[in-house]
Image (cartoon, rainbow, N blue to C red):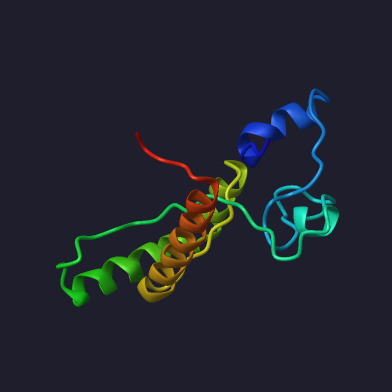
Amino acid sequence: MFPVASGAAPHISAGRMRGLAVASLKPSDLAPGLPTVAAAAGLPGYEYGSTLGLFAAASAPAAIVNMLNREMVGLLTTAEARERFFKAGMDIVASSPAQFAAAIKLDMTQSGKVIQNAGIRSD
């Protein structure tokens, strides 16, 4: 089971759950001392996570997209925002529209392979 850090942290602190590993590629400050699944289970490259982001219509003018990106990156990189997101169990990656698009495309490709290999259908 892979609960999000914010949901698991209170239970781990209270001793009701024990963290075994994090599903990110690198160890996380959200769960200090825990190894990655890749290292603990001998699964090189294993990663599982959720991505949140701001989307716009494909027809949105580049100037508007870039302005929104600048404003969001400026906000997300403040100490206050980083602290609030960290307390909510989230790591912030404030990237460019191109980097975010590439990350979403990679996620869709990887998830698509898993869905296809498992024969999952949406009947």
